[in-house]
Length: 166
Image 1 (cartoon, helix red, strand yellow):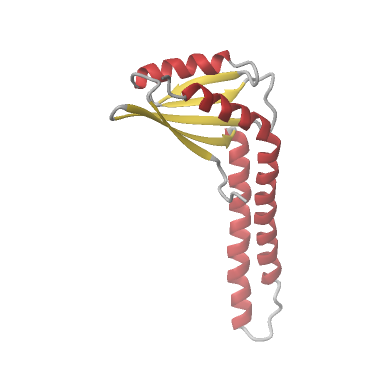
Image 2 (image 1 turned 90 degrees about the vertical axis):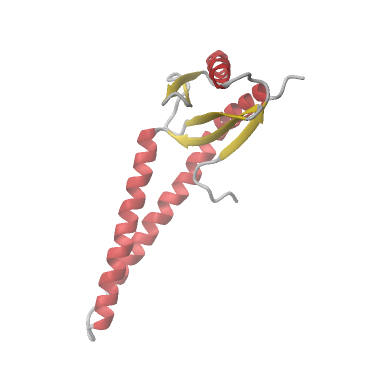
């Protein structure tokens, strides 16, 4: 089982003459895809963000970020999949709530343990925090399952296009 939250891959290729050529060719390639249709945005002059078009997008649709760099005689493309920003924010908020509940429950429970004769309701807060974190983690894996077809399409489209031309 892959424990990483965001799958990633790397490609080294001699297909492109330069960074600019790679950006131009990849942008054209992703915009020409029909399944899934894609939108392409260039960020910071070195990062391409590929998103599924509005008509094919659903809650779990992935976005693919590509970092492109010239390395000696080839171009290296580092890629990472992730959810849309609103979904990512929802997960980070869930982990934050779970983490705060866990830490707060742990502190209260240890305080109650040090004071003899206290009820141990802090333990219940600790357990609730662990359950929230577990649910968020499980939900993230369910989301990856629902995004798998689109992720595979983007992954294969990238690898097939970036193969070296001989």
